[in-house]
Length: 132
Image (cartoon, rainbow, N blue to C red; front, top):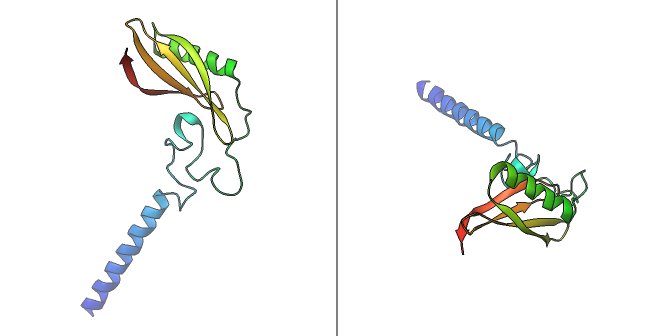
């Protein structure tokens, strides 16, 4: 009787742990990486699985920005977070379904930095400072 109760208790504990872990992961692909680099966080709401399944191109509801809007977003970011830096140029990075932008910056001590601007105008710093 005691041994059967122990086996049942162990089985219930395993089921409880599996249920708790799947609840925290969001129940499968739709939970994905949460607010991480694959579509969440600074790039906007979403998960790793969004846009990858179901025929959606991943463009979202907002229209893509233009090169001039990307330049303006980079200038605003630099003025707020990187005083002393200037945006030297902004170039498009064309993908299969959308265009991102890369802004090249130069700093007061000759260092350079790169910013990425996603198709909806969110700015993300890329790597650290480098001196030429």
